[in-house]
Amino acid sequence: MTLSVITIDGPAGSGKSTVAKKLAERLNAGFLDTGAMYRAVTLASLKKEIDLEDENAILAVMDASDITFEIVSKSMAVTVDGVDVSDEIRKPYVTEKIKYIASAPAVRKRLIAMQREFAGAHGTIVTEGRDQGTEAFADAQHKFFLTADARERTRRRMADLEAAGQAVDIDELRLAIEKRDESDMTRQTGALRPADDAIIIDSTSIDLNGVVDLIIKYINAK
Ligand code: DC
Image (tube, rainbow, N blue to C red; front, side, top):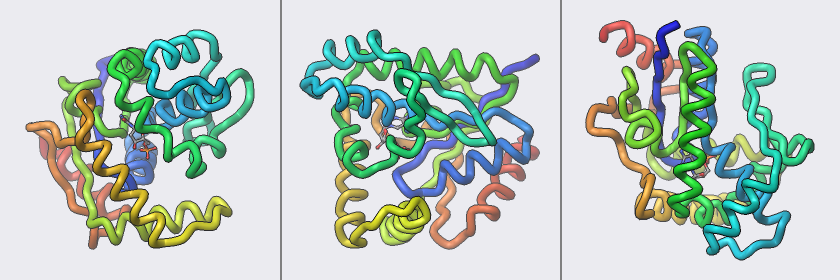
C-alpha cells in the first residue's frame, strides 16, 4: 500500500485535533495526535518526579516506562505502564509542564521515530502536531497549517475542558494559551511554524466541518 501522509500543524486550540479526526474518518485513514505523545512522556516524568530540565532523565523515563498509543473508537488511547491516561494527560497540571519535554531535542528525535513507525503501520494517515510538516514528515504529500485568533482558540479550549468536566477561568486559560504559543514558537528544535509548502487555513470564522471540506477540496485538487 502506498503511504500517504497528511499533516496538520497549528497552535493550541486551532481545532487541528478535531479537524484531523474528522478528516481521517472521511478519508478512512489512520489518525495520530502527536501532542498526546508529548503529554504522555510529561505525565510519566512527573510521576517519576525527575528534574524536567534533565534530558537524560527524561530519556531514562521513556526507557523505563511502557507507553502505548492506539486508535480506539476513532480516538487516541494512551496508556502509561498499563494505566489508561487518555484523560489525565489533558489536565492543566500536565499541560503546564510539557514545554520541558517538547524542548528536549533527543526526546523529540525519539518521538518522531515513533511517529514515523506509527504512520508506517497505517496506509494513509492524518497526523497533527507542531512539527509534522516541517520535521516528522517533511516529504508529506499534503500539508496544512491551521490557525485561529487567540480569542477564538481560548473559547474552543474552554468548551473542550468544560465538556471534560474541568472548571477553568477564561482569563487564566487565555494567558496559558499565549504562554504556550510563545514556548511552542521559540524552542530551538521542532518549533511551531508552517512548512514552506503548507496551505495555511485561518479557521477563526469557519466551523470545523467547513475546514474539513476545504482540506478535502485541496487534497482532491492536487
Ligand atoms: O496539541 P497539544 O495541545 O496536545 O500539544 C501539547 C504540547 O505538546 C504542545 O504545546 C507542544 C507539544 N508538541 C510538540 O512539541 N510537538 C508536536 N508535534 C505536538 C505537540
